[in-house]
Length: 72
Image: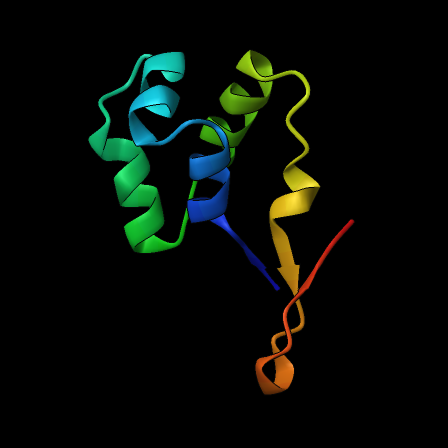
């Protein structure tokens, strides 16, 4: 199971839009994608500024034999 940070950032308008909404530099969202990690602090802040953001839709389950299943 993993969290699809790239897809979330794209869905939120890209790195610049995410950075602007959080008051951070645009290189920070790129670093999340590059590392494949995002802190819970940033996730909470993203949820604060995007009340309707459904973080569950970015959780990718079971990557056996190339199968990717997204949580609903």
